Image (tube, rainbow, N blue to C red):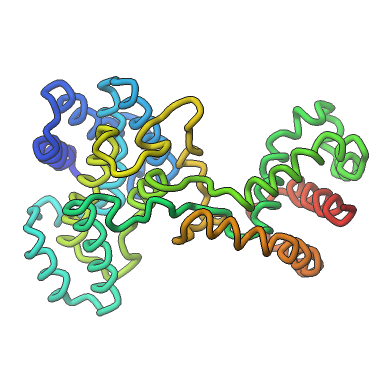
Amino acid sequence: MLRDTHKAFAEKIALELGFSGLNTRVFIDGSVGPDSHGDFPHDHGKNSKLLYKLDVARDLYHLKDEYAYGELGNVLHYIQDKWVGNSADSNQVEIVSDEELLDLINHSRNPCIIADEYSSMLDILLASKNDGIDFWFDHEWGIWHRDYSSCIFVFADIVELMLPTLQPDSSILSDMQKLKEYVQSNEFKKATKDGFFASIITNFFDPKVQGYPAAMYCLASISPPSNNRNTKVDFNISYRLSLEIARYTVCEPELFKFQDSWTHRTEKNKHMSLSLVIPQYHVLIAKPVDGVHEERRLNYFDERSRFLENWADTEKSLSGFSNRSEKWKLLMLGLVEMLKAE
C-alpha cells in the first residue's frame, strides 16, 4: 500500500474515533513508520511483530503515553500491507458503504466459498462496530494448548533455548553423543523435572490468553483468502479491520463491558504476550473457561496415557520434522523418558 494511502486510512480512523490533535499526528506518523524499519516485505511474515506491537500499544495507552498511537499505527501498517500489498489497482479503490461492500461481495466473480469467507469476516467487523467486541466474542473464551502433546513440544522448545544455561560446557553441547549422555543424566533430570511437570499442568489446564486479549489476537490474525481475492473487497475489509483494532486498542477501560488484563493492566493482572501465541501449539476454544478446565481435568490422565501409547509412532515422525534441530529431538526423547518413569 502506498504511504499516502496508509496516511489516508489513519486520518479517517483518527477522525472517526475522535483522537486528539497530538495523538492523530503520532498515529499518522506511525502508520508509515514501518517503511523506515528496513524489514521488508510487509505483506507477509509479520504476524508476530504486529501482535507484539499491539501489546506494546495497549501497555503504553495504560501509561497515558502518546506513543501508544505510534505503535498502533505500525500495527495497522502491517495489517494493511498484508491485505492490500503493492497492488497498483488498490490505489484507485475507494472506501464504500457497508451495504455497497456486501453487494460487492455477493456479486463478485469469486467462487461461492470465497464470497462466504468474505461475508463472514464482514459480519464479525460489523458486529464489533455496531454492538461492541463483546457481541461476537464471548468474554470467557480462551486460546489454549491444542492438546497434551503440544505441552511437551513447547517445553522442549524452552529447554533448547535454555541449554547454554543448563549446561554451560560448550564441548558437551557441540558433541551429539555427549549431549545425549547429558540428557540421560540425573543432572539433566534434576534441572528440568520440576519445571517440566509444572509446565505440562499449567499449559494443559490454563488458557494463554482469554477474553479481550483473545479477541484482539483473533482480530489481528484475520487474513485474506489465499486465492480468488478481490482487490476492492480486500481494500475495504482492510480499512474496517484497522478501524476495529484501533477502536479497542486505545479504548478507555470503563467502555468495555467486562474487565480483564486487556482493559485494566496491572502487575497482578497481566496476560501472556499475544506474539507468544503460536498457531501450531495453540487453538481458540469457544467455550467458557470453567467448562474447558473441567473437561481437561477429566481427560488429563487419559491424554497422558494416549501420548505415551502413541510415542513410538510420534518418535518415528520426528525424523521428518525438518524445522526441528537434532538437539531438540534429543531433548524430546529425554523428556518422554521422564514421563515414562513417573
